[in-house]
Amino acid sequence: MKYSEKISNRLNDLLTRTYDAEKGYKLAQDKVDNPSIKKFLGDKVQQRYNFGHELKNEISSFGQLPDKGGSFKGDVHRTWMNLTATLSSDETEKILEEVERGEKASLEEYNEILNDSDIVLAPSTENMLRKHRNAIQAALNTNKMYDELVS
Image (cartoon, rainbow, N blue to C red; front, side):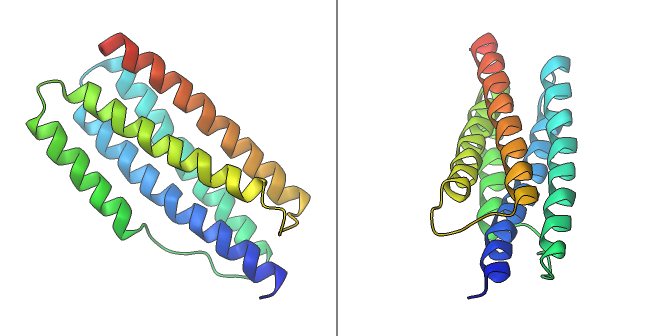
């Protein structure tokens, strides 16, 4: 596999996860009533939208085609969020728990790419991935704070 194909495949995996996260955050935002949490989730919708554009641009710079949509796994996760929110007496707490689970998985995927010794990332790619990873970590920290407040 050529370098650009290998990198673009990994970036497309992140792009799919980003599409899923954007849709998940939008669903979560629609389900909560707390204005502060609603704003936090709305900010994450926009953040993931921006991440998606950055990833698409980076993939295109390697001469590859970016993926167009989310994953089946993401669709299942959103369905699960809907179901647990419907059945739960504390919808916001359950949603924040799901956000945490999703953010941890995203963080792990970013770390795997950044720490993969079999690939050499272009400086632009590495900088973008580090910026995204750090923003995801910050979102995870903020989410934990909100979760503690509603628990």
